[in-house]
Image 1 (cartoon, rainbow, N blue to C red):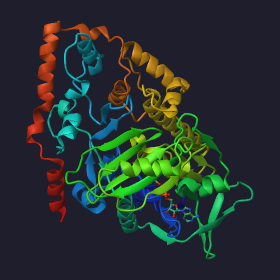
Image 2: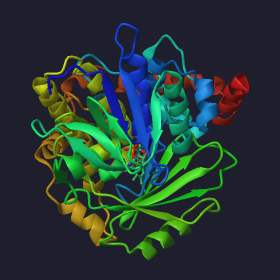
Image 3: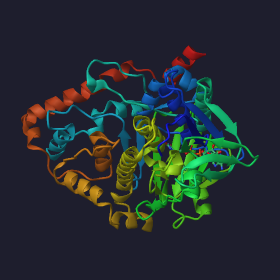
Image 4: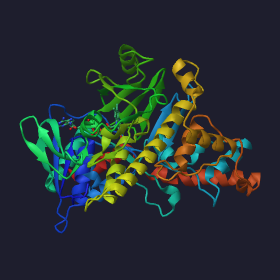
Length: 501
Ligand SMILES: Cc1cc2nc3c(=O)[nH]c(=O)nc-3n(C[C@H](O)[C@H](O)[C@H](O)COP(=O)(O)OP(=O)(O)OC[C@H]3O[C@@H](n4cnc5c(N)ncnc54)[C@H](O)[C@@H]3O)c2cc1C
C-alpha cells in the first residue's frame, strides 16, 4: 500500500466501530490534516449488545475525547467499578478480589507482597487485601475519587456501562466531528486486481463506498479480515474451553455494588454487572460440559434479582486473527479475536488497537514496517491477557467437576508456567512489555487462586518482628483513613447525576 490515506472507512457500528470513529476523528483530523471518515453499519444485523465492564484505561479514552464524567455517567447509565470479586474460583466457597488498586506500600526493590509473605510466615494476622483501599471501598460500598497527595491513597477505577447507550453516545460525538454514517448491508467487496487491497465496499442497494484504509469492526463475522482476506484464525480453545455465553438482564438492586462479580460454576462462570437501571448477567460456559438447558438452569437459578427478559445465547471462538492488520484492512474489536470477558479486557483491546493505529498510522502509505510492528504488538498483548485468563482457570483446587480437574492438569503456555513457578518459589514477578496487567494484578490473582510464595525477598527482613507488627498495623490504619469520609457509591452517583441534569 503506497497511496497516502485520504479516507478511512470503518465497517461496523458496535463499540469497536464507534470508539474507532470517535478517537480517529478527535486525534487525527485537523484543518491542516484533512481525513474523511465514514462508518457503515447494518441495523438489520445490529450489535452484539454485551460488553459492559471496563478497566481503568477507559479513563484515558474519556480524557482524550474530553468527555466529562457526569455527562458520561448520565448518558451511558454507568456505575463505578473498583475491581472484580471472584467467587468459587480457587476452591468452592472461596472469594477474593482482583482490584485495580495496589496493596500496602512498596520498599525499593521489595514489593509489598514480600513483606506480607514474611508476616504470613510469622503468623501475623491480616489479609493482603486489608491493605488495599480499592478493596476496602468495594466491600464497604463507598466511593469518590481520592485526591490525597500520597500515592498510598490512589484508587484507580473504571466503569460499568450500558453497551448500546455507550455506542450511541460515541456515535453522537463522532457525527458532531464530521464522521459520516452509512446505514446498510455490505454484500461484497471490490479489490485491486494487482495489490489485493480493498478498494470499495459494495452495498446490497448498489452503493459503492470507496476508501484508502478499511477498519474491520464487523464483529465476530470478520467480514473483511476473514471472509474476504482469509487471514486465518489461531484457536485457543484447548486452553480456554468456554465457547458460549448466555446473557440476561435483571432488575437493579437497591444498593449498587461498585464492583463486578465473577462467580464460578460447574463448567463456566457467571458475571453480574451493576448498572443504574438494571443488572447485566450472563453465564460463560463450555458447550462440551453444559447443554444450553443446563446453562439456562444454572444462570436463572443464580440471579439475585428477577430477570427482565429471556436469556439469549452467544457463541464465540476464543483465539485471534493470525494478523490484525492485513493489506489495507485493520481488524479492531471482535473481528480481531476473542477472549472471554473474565477480566473485562475486550474494550481495552479496542482502545489499545486504536492507540496503536494512531501511532503507526500510514499517513503517506508505504506501510510494510508499520504493519509488521502493529501485528507484533497486537499478538504479544493478546497472548499476555490470554495467559492471565488461563491462570484463573488453571490454578484451582476444585474437585467437583471434570471441567475444573482437566483445567488444573492441562499444560499451560510456557511463559505462564514460568511465571507461576517463579512466583511460587519466592514471590518474584517480572513485568512483560505490553502486559496491561501490572504486578499488583498478578499478585492478587495468583494468591487469590491459592498460589502463595514459599519464600520472600530478604529485603523484607529489615524490621524486627515487633517492628513489622507495628508497621503493618499502622499501614492498615493509614490505608483505611479516607474510608470514613467517602460517600456511598449511590450517593456519589446521585451527586454526579444531579450536576449534569
Ligand atoms: C458474552 C460476552 C460478554 C462480554 N463482556 C465484555 C465486558 O464485560 N467487557 C469488555 O470489555 N468486553 C466484553 N465483551 C466484548 C465486547 O462485547 C466487544 O468487544 C464489544 O462489544 C465490541 O464489539 P464489536 O464492535 O467488535 O462487534 P459488534 O457489536 O458485533 O458490532 C459489529 C458491527 O458490524 C456491523 N456489521 C457486521 N456485518 C456487517 C455487514 N455485512 N454490513 C454492514 N454492517 C455489518 C453490525 O451491524 C455491527 O454494527 C463481551 C463479549 C461477549 C461475547
